[in-house]
Length: 485
Image (tube, rainbow, N blue to C red; front, side, top):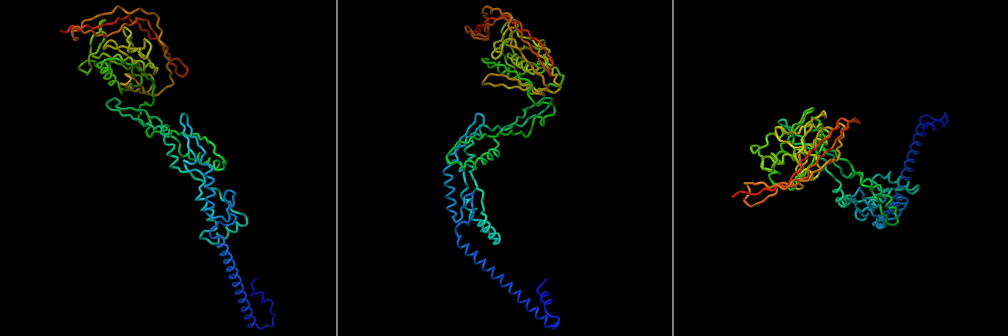
């Protein structure tokens, strides 16, 4: 109830109405001015007291302000900063060992400027009660004085220094993903490369791991060694094999290799040429692949050079010498892929090239049109033939790409049932060599009866069980004697 109505009620009824109203108004106005005066006086008093308080704490932190439980009231910013600088000095020699498999890097807290952020802490403690909002300042100052204000510590480390120190280890670990490559033209794959995942250091997770260690490290009284495992993440290629083609060619299904060390230049040329003509060929589902058909004519007209071949029991120069190295290598790839071999013929005698990285008997000769190498693609998807020649190792590799169907091929070690010694050395006249020059073109080899077996299992069931037999004639060292005048 207002003063006006309270006074009106208390005045006697005989009091003149007009004078009563005037009196009440006068008293009410006086009371209002009294309240205003008291409020202004109180405001000025508080403001004056606040100004005095601010002057007292002009260059120091307000009372009751703490950091991590340590009271810095009355301290200057410099004193707060120096306090945490000294803390950082104590932990400067703390070691961090970053470890992943065979890769390790060691850095110290000092090397990456790790520790308390002394500048930020000093600024934060001093800023309490010093904002542009005076009411907010008064509230914070009173709260700090009565109950205390405890700030969490701020930490820091130099990310640029950290990245510089771990750069060598990241270079060792990081492997870029490989995008798939697949180009198809005129019924043949011109370029194929399967995609592969890359790996790299998960820097965000590693930095997070380091940050989580800082509160513990800053609490240490003496240096220690902290071990941090380096997190790794898989990096997917932008173009996967599945996206690159629609023929179901997405992974390696079989691989075969052979060495042709100490081959003459013409033989290496023929191996390279025949292999290149197989590179990129697609074998359709249920197709029976024919080596002779795929390679085509082998003669000087198609680019082949003369190298030594066996013809009618003699070593002579012939077009395409070395092509059997190609058929042998592809035979091994088809065996490894678990494909049905529908036609294969062993060489007449043991050829040293084919036993440089293999036991005897794992070879396949070709001689168009009668002797061929054939195998069937029964995988239900296309198969792509890819070749690789490594001159530095004198090695040929055929890789068969397709889609795996859970078949596993197991090839036994060759078993030699019987052997016969080499024949006597043979000398043959050669009109292409200068008279008096002698050149060895073949080396003695034991004859042998050899076999190996293969078992192909798919989903626990044997789908192929075959035996490959080779009957090698004994062979002699052969020398060519020059007769050219």
